[in-house]
Length: 597
Image (cartoon, rainbow, N blue to C red; front, side):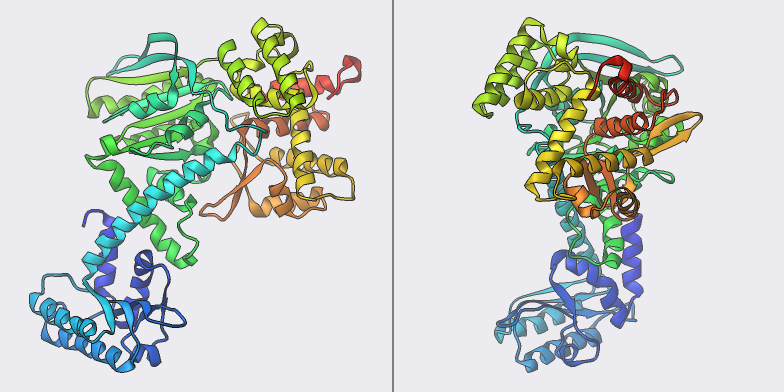
């Protein structure tokens, strides 16, 4: 059986005997029969020929399993007699089942044993004690488990993409409206051996579905999708992941572990851990099954069929600290060289521009594996034009109240004429910022705003609505509760940074324990109330539950707001987006500016 992890597991099962074999095989059997529970050793049920059972209070048991862990290497008549004894014990017990299974720790090459054991098992069917019977050697069982884990991973990855796409609508009033055809530039990065890489422009200001372009990739290919914050990279990746004709393995980089050396196996173990597959397993079982699921995923992505059946998307390289260095990026991409399916990487424009040499150095290995001149498709998402912005405004207006629709009609007219730029600058042409504007205008009408003021107003209204809908107040005053939540979010954002080489960078998450501590220090609220009524999202990880901001721009905003509130006048070591937000907030609260949020 291919794969060292599976080989080791097979070897472990081969040397496990008696109850130790039952203990080691149980997590694997529960992949196939989730409700199996172990019977007490050397007690009543064990004497009935039952090691594991799917229990029901009345009627036949759905599944009964008898495990045979033998010391001898070769099995035959003696071992078949032991199976027959277990069959007789079950018949004598008077209980019955739908499915009776015998699994043993040898392989399937012992024909004398196999024939005799199946004859014994058929006695159960003839007597009406079982409707179906099965005999599995350890290799057969492992293959069944491997196939089941693979199917569960595929279904889980699809479900995960659906859930991720569904997380955004709760942020905005009408976020299910999606503009599929958007402007972008199409280029090709040419990686040349021992020469500088080049970007060759192929199509300027094209229009189309980025999600569909991503899905067209076949074979050994790499694609980079880059754009400014809020330009729709993640949205396009999530819509691509809804495809039914192939499996899109979508990895959100910011959800990955942020400490230690990050290998691709670590990435997939974490991705497997994030799926809703493991709730029925205890911690010990999960420790066995999650790496096996990741191994199955790697095997699936690395075989010949992967070229057309799978697509791997690493979304938001800029949102993980490991990929800010050439070493971290190169380690990851070098491990992806053996992946046979297309790979798509998304990142912010500033990250791509700053680390272009790192990308091309990391990709250089490809030119040695495949061919001297490796083309890497590059899609650069452009700012929206009037057409896309007006289309989104009008679609949302169709679902608004009469008053909200009227206000959005005014906004659409101002965008068409270009007058909206006086109130909002270029923000109406950024898909994410346009969502903020639409919510803001539908509630209060047009208003002069910079980005920070717009997010601040929107965030407070969003918290107000959430707090009201959950009957969650600190002292009977919703506005006090909202202010406390804003302060708590600022403090949490301030904790999600690290300084390296004189630069301050955002980190991806905080532990739930750290969030609980900070929330208790800032507010009288329970952490569950804050997670329910804010812009935070819990994610599972190998280090326990972690907490992230739902949108990166909200993490940036609350970080800037923290330093603006505490009187910091400059953030020279911080990224440019945070400096800009901070500058807007400082100016808005400066009495001499005449401005205010």
